[in-house]
Image (cartoon, rainbow over all chains, first blue to last red; front, top):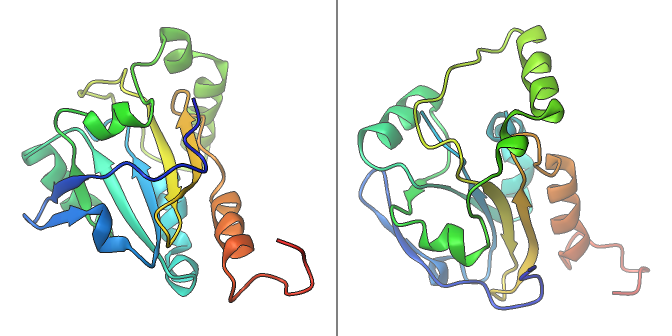
Length: 40
Length: 143
């Protein structure tokens, strides 16, 4: 089911350097989320 | 391959005011090794319980999506171009995808990639942002 046109799912995720990224951090900007399949 | 193509367009993405977050479910050393190897200009965030994946409908792939003709063709093209094909050691069944969120927090693109060959083109991602950005949209076009 597509989520186009709905509010983005909120998240709070930590990056590889330990910084936390929240959806709200990107308010006012375009955000492209690229979901990887597997890295290794 | 998709990430490499995105990286080639990173200046255009930045010019459009677009940030990129790469999401993985593989934590710790695997994610750090990936960052070291790729030197990506964007953060790689870890979703260890895959809750964000699942919220966007990215579940497990069917076997035909993983080893079907489109996937074999994709890897053959990569090899012909001199790319390196590695045997995966991670969970290969997890689906990936792309989501574009606009400056108001609304999802403008939601694409679940069915297997490795199912990504949208980078040009189509850029075009969507260009089309919907007031500063770059054609003022004569109705919105």
